[in-house]
Length: 116
Image 1 (cartoon, rainbow, N blue to C red):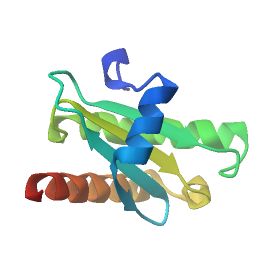
Image 2: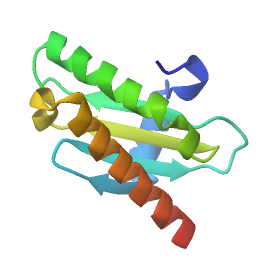
Image 3: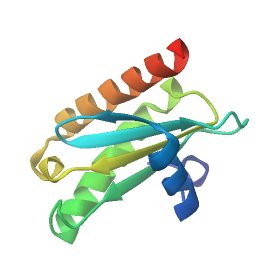
Image 4: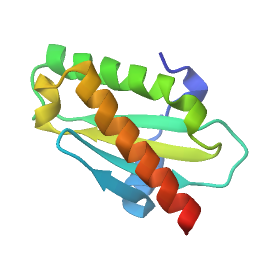
């Protein structure tokens, strides 16, 4: 589970990451990453709309995404904010499929950050 310092909590933070961040899309999730340059822990935020499914399904998807991000925490540079938007296809995805999508996007976003 993600501890409090690793979570985005303010709407303005979500908005800035989605608008100014680098984006990576997949079949089940869309990830946006913004490197702030601050000396702090990386933070994650999740957007799971009602299009994904009922509250039970949305919370299951959120829990799975949080577990994936907690496992990938060591690979994310400090001062980075990441927002993951779940698409309706994530409702039927297994944990392994969500893990593959998120780790692929995180690796791609890190490569783009390093090359620029």
